[in-house]
Length: 289
Image (cartoon, rainbow, N blue to C red; front, side, top):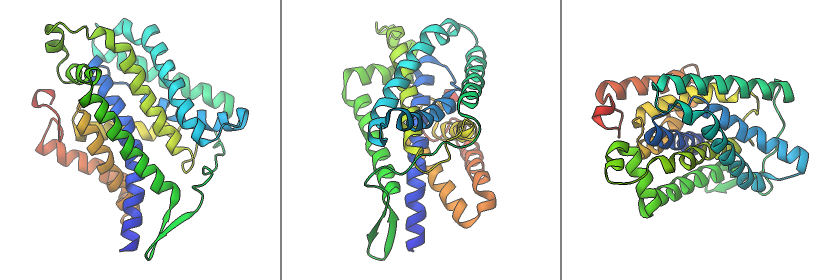
């Protein structure tokens, strides 16, 4: 039983990375109709940025958790203004190819600067040990990552459901055309929404840095699983992105524990099962299927 709880905690921590990144991907797709393939590269930049800040400026994990998402928010705004917005009126395939090419460029630049071997990054101060609860011995950092991810997802949900800005973004995500018909300038929110989505991927990268190998290729496998998360939750669904993110994290953790050879396969088995029953995903709109 104690082992099962540990696997559950590990799954929630991993699911937090997926939920945060998928939330950003869902918001970007909902408002802009852009399938952002560079999301995995932004996740990688979040982790690499943490390691670089620690090495160059001696900025600890807690500082990186604030600075890196802000930097990636600004980088996302730059990418949207210079590249993405010029293709919004065209077939979505063009922006998919653009963000795919951007991924290749970012990964290659990181490899040229920092090589292909992993960058070192230690557990943050105060979270190096383990917490004993009854007969359980739980990783302090995994506990923090799980609770922080849940708290941040709740904060984003509050922002999207309890504020006027969130109402506009949510309405644009669900039905951009109808939102425009109500007199709301959806285009005005495109740039900050894209930056916000990229910032969430950066937060996931910072959280992953202390116990994931920080390499230029760490986003490659991440983006594949992330698309599975989005399909399971429903493309463009904010609630679906969060629920599916934690669900996939649990499936991956249990798979690594009880069937390690099939851990990744189980994620796509889950995706196939969901699509067979609900082609639009768990919380997606039927017309999206």
